[in-house]
Length: 93
Image (cartoon, rainbow, N blue to C red; front, side, top):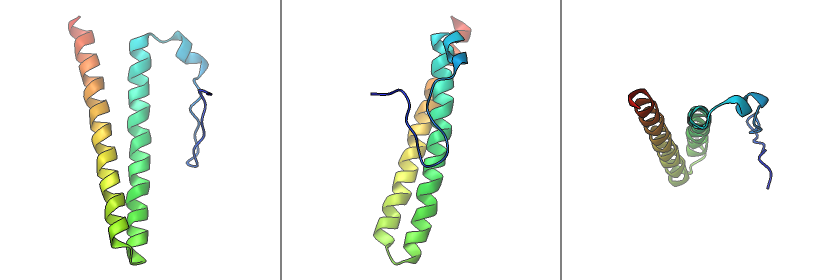
C-alpha cells in the first residue's frame, strides 16, 4: 500500500522532505493540524451537498449528511484535544 493517496479536492498526502527532519512529536502535531483542516474541508462539503439534495426533496439523506458533518467536526475536536495534550505535556516535561 502506498503512503500517497489522492482526493478530488486538490491535494495529496505525500510526505515532504522536511518531514524527515522533524521529531516524532513535531510530526504528529503536524499531522493533527493537517487532519483537522482535512476534516473541516470534508465537513463543509457534506453540509453543502446536504443543502443541494434537500432542495431535490431528499430530506432524510440531507439530514444524514449533516450528521456526518457534525461527526466529522467531533473527530476534529478530538484531534485538537490530542494536540493540546501533547503541547501541554511537552511544556511541563
